[in-house]
Amino acid sequence: MSTFITKIKERYNNTSAEKLFLAIFVVGLLVRVLFPELKLLHHDEAIHAWFSYELLTLGTYLYDPMYHGPLLYYLMSTAFSIFGDSDAVVRLVPAITGALLIPAIYALYKLDYVSKNQAVIVALFFALSPNMVYYSRFLRHDIFQLLLTLLVLVFIFAYIERKKWYFALFAGICGALALCLKEEVPAILFIFVSFCIVAWLLGKMEFPKTWTRDLVIAVFAAVAVGFVFYSSFFAYPDAFFGAAQSALDHWFAMHDECRLCGPPYWYVLLLILYELPIAIVGIASVLIWVFRKEGLLRVIKAGTDYVNGIVERCEFRLPYHPFDRKELFFILCLYWLFGTMAMYGYIGEKVPWLLIHQLLPLIFVAAYALQDLSLKKAIITAFCTLYLVVLMVHVTFIPVADINEPIVQVQNSEQLRDVMALIDAADRVAIASSSYWPLPWYYRGDRWNKIDFYGDMVPESQLYASDPDVIITHDARSYPWLEGYTKETYRLSYWFSWYENKDRLLKWFFLRDGPMGSVNIEVFTRA
Image 1 (cartoon, rainbow, N blue to C red):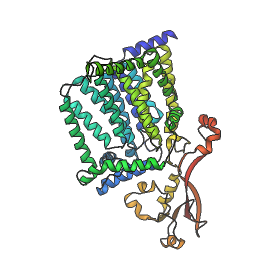
Image 2: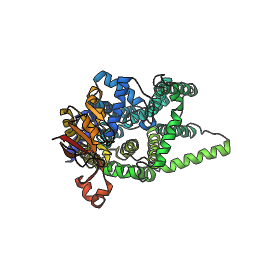
Image 3: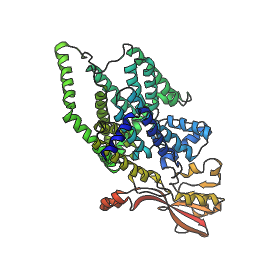
Image 4: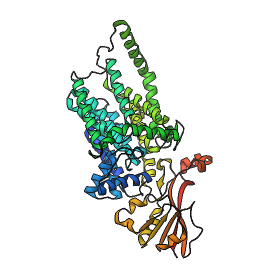
């Protein structure tokens, strides 16, 4: 057995990082792009796809903070214009985006901010993480934001190491594009920028001599990119200048309203449910750094030296002393991790896709404890990978089934396929319900012409006027019966229900079954 392990270790050591990353990239890409139409679009996915389709067909877009920034819609409308508007395109664009984070991780390795082993482990965990895979197959802004914020970090480090002005330009452009996606991006950029400033003040990081000029270039490029997108390509210039205030007003109101509330530790629970090995190894990394490596003591000493420097020499920056890049990056990842956990823990809106912004720095932290790849740590890495694969396959590749998992939030039910089959066979359809998404997406364009939409219950005589073959209502506001029709209840959307499962949590954890919360519709079909 020891000989077998030795041979594997030798083979690994003799394999270039490029080949390892290419293999991981292929695996990560495959699990993201395979069977993109396996499940119906999520409620939010359908809305985002619909707005993108409207932008393509009508050429209209105006920023609304409820639906986040403009970049996603312009990107998707471009993809629709090239490849057609379909569920497959809706899923493939974020899938490819998610896979591109693996080359970004490789770039950090090439800049020498992570070791080969650490970079490979990070890429492997990222490629197979249940949350990272699930939300790479999901049309929301977050996976695009995650790629762009990581690229900001890559270009900042490239600028510091290579001292080329165009890396500052690229960092500014990526930061601006991230700001064109979601409203919490300024807080994440603040984490990166504030860390670099503190590291510079402590003499642990050195900026090029032309940094003021390069900063002006980066800021100018960022403002230009932001103006183009938030003004809808110059159609609404005022929208750019009012975007920040509009975003603050809306999301502070949402925070106070507590529409989707949860405790501050809500994301910790999600980590335990889906990323438990990463969380455990991440804690081990922190303990190793604090106690064995005495990392915390070094940070405290650096802070003390800085204060003493101000008091004794009236200097606001310590002299530059070259510092271990990998150690510096690990400290940044800790700051990044705890900063995002604090931010998202505080924000009132608790939704599962926000976990990925906390999970990425956690993966970097976890890889710190495993990077020497001794036999014991290789076994731990293999176990972690297997655990992630099992859960990833469960939440991603169960065919045509509603799954009782918190990760799905409010997912549209697979039972809608039966409803849409009835609609397809009908000549006339009436929708008398306030709950009807994702039907506008699936019946976009001319397909909507056969649908009479009322939005809520109407008098029966009004329904009969168009002589529909199918009538759809909300089960909570419906008709006891309609003459000449048969009635059947279908699940429109569903979610994991704490109240239904709180007395059987251990059983649910292992079986992942049980009752779910749902929005139901009643479908009347001509008898």
